[in-house]
Image 1 (tube, rainbow, N blue to C red):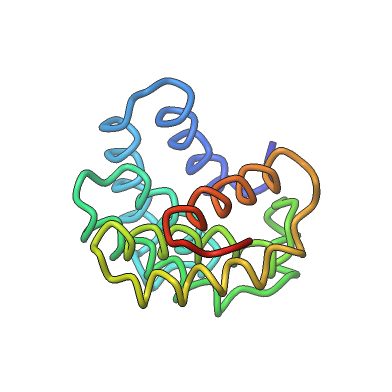
Image 2 (cartoon, helix red, strand yellow; image 1 turned 90 degrees about the horizontal axis):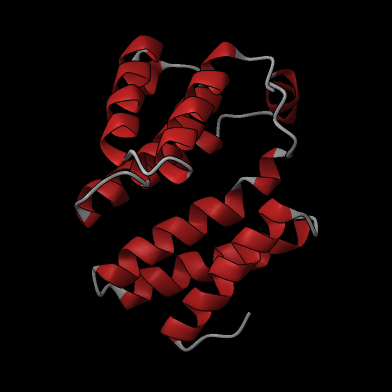
Length: 154
């Protein structure tokens, strides 16, 4: 359980989507939270995590990419102290591989393989900060699948 109420609400949306299959309900909750935090003017940690989660519930790859790019822009403004304060068990560096992986996947879907490879390489470069836990294995597995699709190596 996180100490940050906004992060807890985002977690509820992730639960709706990933564990209950309620994609539309998650998207609606994320949209409400987005309004509540003040959109891109909100706390960068909230903007990053919420945009990253919102990207996952988009039906259109262009919208997914827009949300993923918002998350990537916001992560630049987050400190390790802020992450720890919110109860997130990662450093800021630990956020980058997933963000770049998702952006890369969007560009791959859009057949922009040059940009897809750029972000893939950035994700690959940051993967060493992840542990051998469920989250680390999830991101590493995604990177391996994407590497295969792009003809890259991990």
